[in-house]
Image (cartoon, rainbow, N blue to C red; front, side):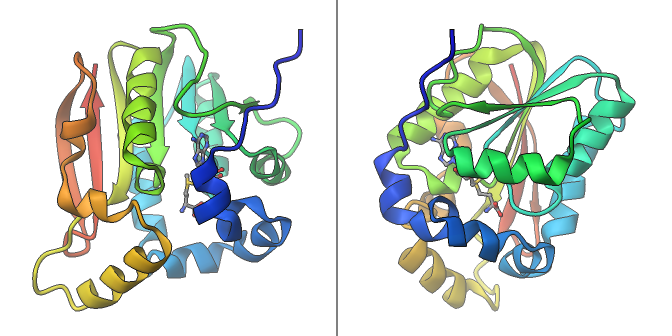
Length: 226
Ligand SMILES: C[S@@+](CC[C@H](N)C(=O)[O-])C[C@H]1O[C@@H](n2cnc3c(N)ncnc32)[C@H](O)[C@@H]1O
């Protein structure tokens, strides 16, 4: 039986229609140089740091929660191919999944799944690794908590969830005023990542194993172990 299309959450339609929902958004943002510019030239560094954390060869089952503009998933898929594993990518917007499908080509071992991150519907303890790349800062608090709970629930015990996202920059960071303006104006939930630690939203049974910050603290990578 075919699963019903996931309902698009209100916050996506209201806050991020211009970035992900509108067809012109995909045409506009799906440019490697632009996603790199949005991250002030740090896209490749953050992408490669997350991929290194996951491993050179990825056997078994990998899960990426939410699509990402640029070549993050094609690069991840290369590692999955080397490890003879499979990759599931979940997104609540079909338009984002189709866009990713075009970037991957026909033979990638990748399943594109239309689900809400806060209600994955997969069996518990099934994935060997889970990745959230710049997703949490876009979510209201209750959705963020449920998304983390779901990511941990579907992860096998002892395995890792890798998170890359915004983080509060150091006080002297030259871009702090401009980033405060940008995030407050266009990404209303993002300041939570400046004002709180991700640990605060983790479910029981998960703990931060490693944390690294980048570029004056504006970005972070967390490795969470179940
Ligand atoms: C990973 S985030 C942002 C990534 C990064 N800023 C970029 O350059 O693409 C964007 C994706 O998250 C998806 N998304 C947002 N909320 C979601 C939810 N509750 N469930 C599944 N996908 C969600 C959006 O549809 C979009 O494809």
